[in-house]
Image (cartoon, rainbow over all chains, first blue to last red; front, side, top):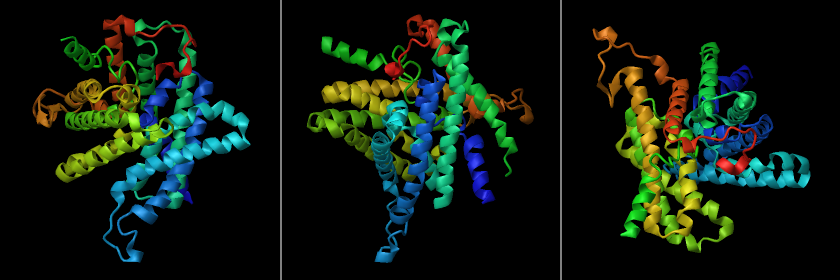
Length: 203
Length: 220
């Protein structure tokens, strides 16, 4: 139990997706102009990662991992090179499914977060979460916790950046630094802050 | 003659004036993570350029036959198949390098540059201009990666491509490595600075100051 808690905290703070691994930066920078849009994006990422990482773990361990087909007499079959294609398919399908479920049962949520869902099909953080899950050999429970944690880490970072950028709206920046430039500098400073969490993490 | 000139423009426009990374905010996801040293940055640039050129060629060749409703999925699958080929090739011939690149080669599949080019240009243009256009975008991306990669490796460990350029202080030289350069924040600062420099030299790229006049989808 304690291990899972530690894994969650690590995924949120120490291994923060946008600030430490640079994943999902496209949406991280493009949609963080306002806090509300940033919040919507964050919630959508948590939902999709919480679903896709454990789903991909199941599929990978049952069908793609080396030796997964040993029970029908093919112990040497190694399909792990298909992982990337499968993961993209699973992410695209879950995004579509989530969109349909929201539309049917929670139309108000759909109205506020729905616009971000199609973007998440090619979101690096979501695919990256599944690929890291394979690389680090998480089991199902760990994968679920890791997915939720990384999603929460992304949401935290994007909401914070959105809040800072809103505050800076009326600041008198040099013309060349406006927009993208200052966003990078802010992200760098936040990344400095987050790297101090690495010191706190128990090895 | 005019056709060649058009192709030349398609090729050179994305290098600085329309650079996919610094102007269109595309594909930064992988651009920063692999730039701690020059050799990983170079590998990543070459892999991405190969993928984007091949994908653009294939998609523009069969683009007319893909039904519009499933075209995104088809494009993603074509791109992902090429990424798998590149990834397997790297693992076969450059195993140590592919270990250091970790998941980032696979993440070319979700790189916005590739999908952006195939979606906006290749689908409605013949193969040759599409491939030239893709090559230009790939080179623009490579330019940024190589610039940041060499900067980080040079100041972070005093080497370039593994060769010692600055003599280190603990080996009797004068250079003390800035270990910040090897950590995540420096990549953000360097890219921010690069964007600032480019936008100061070409002021028409700077963003308007009104807030929040931008619509959401406008920049993507």
